[in-house]
Length: 459
Image 1: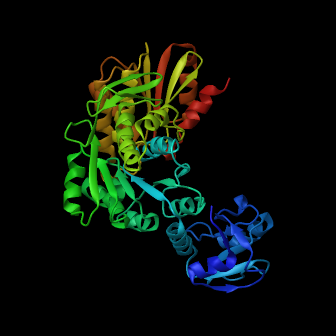
Image 2 (image 1 turned 90 degrees about the vertical axis):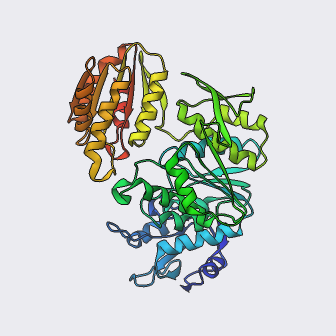
Image 3 (image 1 turned 180 degrees about the vertical axis):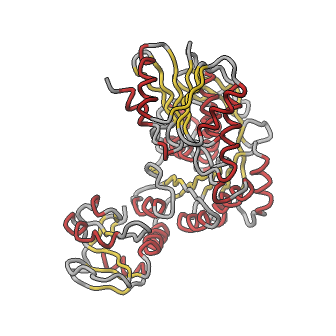
């Protein structure tokens, strides 16, 4: 984490200040949440639409903050600690992170994509940690606040950092990539996430490819080569300079392709580029092997040997609620509740299809942020369920009604039901804990479908 004198922070931001204590004192890390401040922190109050962090500075001081950024037009600055005056504390946070990043001697891999960026981050960080002192984005800190906080959390001893980068609109990735300045950039794929704001998949691709704008001019750009939409967008981007490009996927035309892929409930086994050497991986889903290809390319670019790559794939520290296989009684739960869009739902269904269970239940909730065509997209997904061996389709949420309608249109030999009450859905599922079966549970973050799993764990 950033450790600098208050005076150094003032100089990094070229800011005015109110000196209420010794500016030679060192700050140790930054924090934007007054409740989580620890001794030595620089408190950075963010002013949002529904809250104003400046109002909680007293709590931050009580918890050990030694200095604070402060909007110039905000009244009543504290008198107990040094106040560093800026026009906008969010911009101050971003500026500080960019300057700190420039002072670090390390390599950074930036990862974005509609699906798979968190899993790819976890896979790559596990591989790199076999050879280097490695840090990665914790949780889902991938936006205009989370990315700067991640950069400021990096140790000066870190050799490689893996930074997840998300966006909602055009221009947001451009901001993040100029903060991160990745040496290697990965785009995992383009999907329907963000259609509500960006309207078309072409715009989603354009927004994701902004990651190139801040790259090291001699860096490596890695993308999913099986997707023509993404391939066309890369061609339109007209990448200039000495940035190199490599692709990954299932097609043999890629720089790295997967083959001999098999899966059990314990994980994946696959080879790459026709090699007899196989990798074992403790994750589920064919798509995770595809994600691993991007990670392997990046790791090899950084000089990691194949033996270390193989070891890193065996014990991946996974971010939760993504294709976790849990057991509750006699029932297996495929927990994929972190987020949902049509592509990730199909990937989860493919995973379930490849696993053995005598009775299979699919529980699907709303997929959010899909724009004006959301009802049609949900209905189409419901029809696609007919391609899988499913015994029951259970849905929850306003938009998920359309999944039910589509399923009823196409599926003849499964029980299909829509629920409007989450507790009623939990009660319906509880008897299945005694049955040998598998339940896939998936929905967008806003639906909090992990509550279903917590409910099933209760006696």
